[in-house]
Amino acid sequence: MTDLPRSWDPLGSVPPDKLVRDRLILHHAAQILASFAQGHVEARPDDGHRSMIWLDDERAFRTEATKDGLYAVLRVPHLLLELRQGDAAVDVLGLSGRSVADGRRWLAAAVGDVRGVGDSQELHPPEYELPHPPDGPDAPLDANPSVLEELARWYHDAFLVLDPLAANVPEASPIRCWPHHFDLATLMTFPAGAPDGGARHVGVGLSPGDEAYAHPYVYVNGWPAPSPEDLPELAEPGRWHTTGWVGAVLEAQEVTQHSDATAQTKTMSDYADRAVSAMCGVVLG
Image 1 (spheres, rainbow, N blue to C red):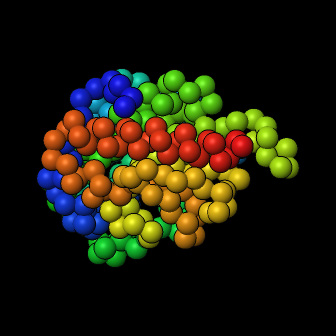
Image 2 (image 1 turned 180 degrees about the vertical axis):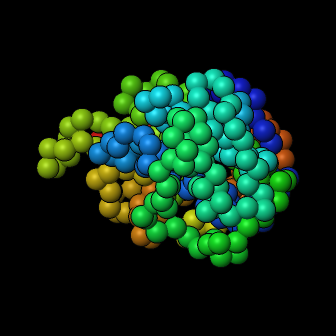
Image 3 (image 1 turned 135 degrees about the vertical axis):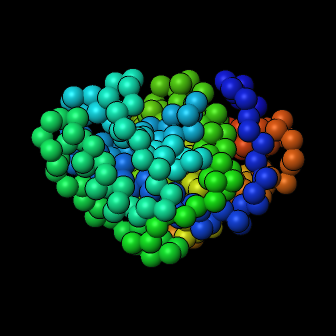
């Protein structure tokens, strides 16, 4: 088991299958940060400018900073939207009872106030398709704080597993949350070796749930995508997923079936070590 740098938050006080509605609300609230980034952060070809950093001590997502040091923060447990500059909070808005559009308008105005230009440029929704919000696109954000706290614990614990991996593997990217799929992940890039001479990749991360699995799961995937016939046996817990995409999956219930933090830590970190090793063996040959 990989030694983890901080303490584990026990998972399961809210059952995994009870997270779906509030996970969708949080996913859509996070698009306010993506809108800020696409409007104000210098674009990068890999779309990384719209990715979010996880502030583990605050249980919050944040954007990259603009040239004048502005960035937006979404604090998960209380659904608070903040505009910061450097280390200082410029303004804060509670999103509960407000729509995503309300959040975008408030953030645009807050940026304009800081820059002394009145109304700043309008923030637009990202162009990619998202899962449908549970109460409609214009509905007030009405999330259960206890469920948001559980979702924050999932991101925190996944970060504890990913952090030493990203720090100790030279090929690993910084940990980011990607607003399209809302997964927190690191990507290991090995510069050569693919049949076409391109790079090979192994990704490991946490999805809070999606169309494949409604509840959180930890995944390990690779590129070029391996053939299911080439996959080695993967010791439980965890299994290979081969429908739509190929990768290793550890589902939430396999973690929360243990009630104590030590067993949960061992389950997730041991799975990540095994699955990354197995995927590297397949992808790198």
